[in-house]
Amino acid sequence: MSYTASYSLSSHYAPPPAYTSTYAGYPGPAAIPAKKQLDYKVQLRARLAQCSLSSMPSGFPFSTSCSHVSLRDIPNLSCESFEFNESLPDGAQATIRFVPPNPVKTKYFSWRAYVPTHSDGYRTSAKYAAAEVQVHPGVLGGSYGRQIMKSSVIILRALAVSLELGLMLTIRVANKETVHLRRHASASSVRLGDVVFIGTDNTGRQEVVFNASAGDL
Image 1 (cartoon, one colour):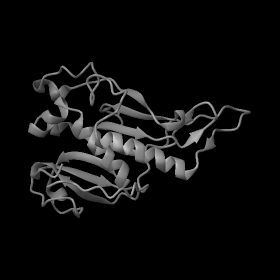
Image 2 (cartoon, one colour; image 1 turned 180 degrees about the horizontal axis):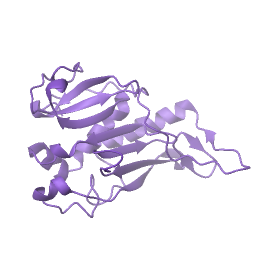
Image 3 (cartoon, one colour; image 1 turned 60 degrees about the vertical axis):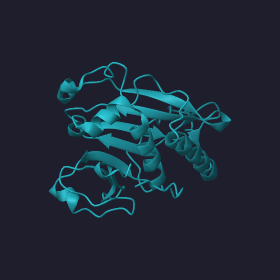
């Protein structure tokens, strides 16, 4: 099954603020007009969907330091966080950031895409992530995990979908709770053990967006 984009570029999902800074005694950067922000989202979404980022580093979606790790080592896979910028029209910069699991904060691998929301006339910045994809480490030991490790395509396209739908996407193995979640129109039926993409909006509502085991994405 293939996914047909609706180009709605929803803004329902808004992760915690990031990339903000205001120096004492100086006004903060001005907000970029909503129409221009939408243009940036459309540009970035298209590049993500086509896997055509011009500044993507070697080893993506993981860092170079862990791209050579064998699958036998995945349960203990430890990588360094990194980020890179993607140039957009008018000199604006989108940012893609990778963060590995942290025993204190999160057990997931995370990729976030930041689209410019503010500008001080010299540089652009983002107050929140426009898209986020998480991967549970348990996925990486299977056949779908091997695809994620070997190619940037899955994570890039997942970021594109996250950006479009306004949902954080979590890739994980389906359990009893997952099987009974509401399904998006793009998702096939789910069985225990399937690798699924779960979408979460900023109210905490969840739904299965794709069933990777069924070939949805």
